[in-house]
Amino acid sequence: MDTEGRTEHTREAGGGQPRRAFLGGAAAVGGALALGTGGTAAAAPASAAARRRAAGRTVAVLGGGVAGLTAAHELAERGFQVTVYERKPKGLGGKARSMDVPDSARGGRKPLPGEHGFRFIPGIYHNLPDTLRRIPFPGNANGCHDNLVASTEVMFARTRGREDIRIPFSAVGTPPPVLTPDAFLRMLTGLLDTATRLPAHEIAYFANRLLVFLTSCDRRRLDVWEHTPWWRFLRAASMSPDYQRLLAIGLTRNIVATKAEIASTRTVATCAEAFVFNLLGRGADGQPDRVLNLPTNEAWIDPWVAYLRSLGVEFKVGWAVRDLRLAGGRIAEAVVTDPQGVRQTTVADHFVQAMPVEHARATWNAAVRAADPQLARCDKLATDWMTGIQFYLTEPTPIIHGHVNHIDSPWSLTAVGQAQYWKNRDFPADYGDGQAADCLSVDISEWDQPGILYGKTAKQCTREEVAREVWAQMKAGLNDTGKTVLRDATLHSWFLDPAVSGLGTPHPANDEQLLIHPTGSWLNRPASRTAIPNLFLAGDYVAVDIDLATMEGANASARQAVNALLDASGSAAERCAVIPLYRAPEFAPLRRHDETRHRLGLRNVFDLG
Image (tube, rainbow, N blue to C red):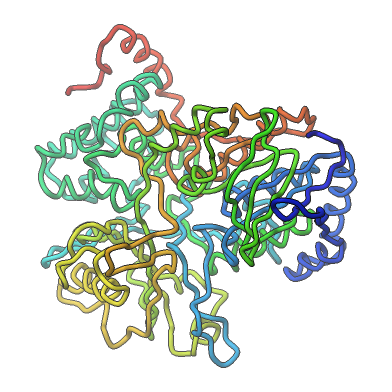
């Protein structure tokens, strides 16, 4: 199985001659030239990689999303011969990709840009930004990372005439020079008092709960907070509706598509901890809220794929993985279907499975599951719908320079006006038919609650009804305080993620769901290394430090998978950096003290109950 210098190949299932994969040097250089990076610079790494691969091993990366492309990136730079299999014909980038709106281009313009959901790359991320820096982009010293643009504020849009809450990121003020528990409480209390207008005792209680988590040891976080719902941790049931909406529901349903009543406190608070320190300028890659300065494929995915081609990575798009076959304790081959639906098999020395969990577990047959019990536990992982819709407007409509959280909307909407960030594009001149001047991109996180127009859930609505309902819910939050932010007359068109199908029928379906994090789910998340020596897992469901289904989690898991593969293959190549979330060193002694208290069965010293 580990023959040196072996080339990955694909053959028809049930027999037939191997069809050796081939990627010419001209194609690799051509991909780089398409980016304007020049032939010489692009050809050098490809030829070096080719020399290393002469004595290397082959890897099949199953899945072309962020996890799969990251794994291919890290492996190709270390001299492995990589083939990426992606089931969707235009699916490279996975849920992070942007896509063309069909039949929307006129007069030589690009099609209107659609997407599964808007990009959000906060400063708490470290692994993904590191990858972005290593993807060449014309004119950028730091590659695609220079395409990140910081937002300056966030808005909580209220309904029924209540004033919206706008929070400039500068509102946090000057961080305390010495971060003590008292200084932390005063800082967070002051910020929440300014931003949320909640009762003082509720603000004080929430700040205390975050301090409890920040000073909790890892063992308590896993033994106690992983099994405690965020709603109960915050005592939300006994607090005001505003407290519930802003601090309990707003941090879960709208952001991570998980209900506060069941969401793991460990998951939610781990990210809240990182965001708080990001606001304080601690341990962050950049500002708290960042987006891309172009549609995602233009700013990131297309340059990434071109760079990987220049390293010799081969892509098979439209190839779906159906089964993994075990022989001699190893994965002998993967059964795939090609773009014509013909079943074939592919062999490689190693397999990195980088598919979403709901699709990956469908390929694990009884023999594969028996070889590693952690795979069967993945059946307990839950997914839910968090899907995007874009509204194209005939007038620029930025609303604010940041994201809008419609915290009172039944469908838990979040939105961002995108054209304001695309400074290198003249939207009507570059996209569509020349009439659309902006793209308002909206994420729908709740698909099972009745709306305000039809009294139906999003799943019960037709696609047209979903669009009308989302538009109405946004207007209810933005047009209710004496000014008209969204006008029907400016609505040019809309585009709903095509991964959603069957809406308005008894069988609605979503082909691209999101992992959610109910209590106890961490215990069912697998490691990147499996008990099968040549099978490695990558994806946002794999156990990583951020503990949240994100692009950062997908990237970090792929780095873990590559490191495990390097260990298994005996490679001397440098291991991938896997960068953890920031934790304040000042609180380390308190966490050590809490470890002792936890062993003795005592509460955290700051836990008032």
